Image (cartoon, rainbow, N blue to C red):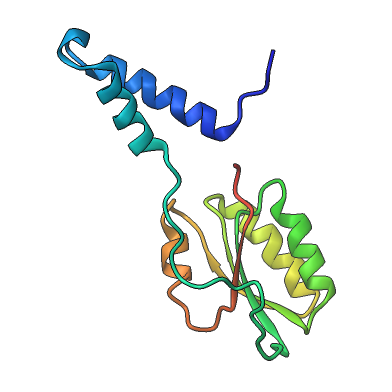
Length: 142
């Protein structure tokens, strides 16, 4: 069986939605349905300028916030902690308090004491309002 690509999946989904959403097919021409389907699935035009050749001054210490400390997150956190002080973890967030506490204790042993955000699915929103974050690393389930 051929592997479905993302664009093909979207077109098939759009066609299915269009078919299920139409009360009577005789009322609509095939061309009209295909035109609507293409309008829904065409890639949007690019906005803004390319950053391919962007050059900025290096940041001496990158301040990182992390969201998701379940499966992949702790590994990312250990890698970042290993390059401290070039990367400093300023904030941790996970919906599960025990995961945040485990990560906090690990970082505390390494000389870092990040702020902790947990307790709700929206805790990250409060975290990203901080002005001392250069990068947000998201390691939540895909």
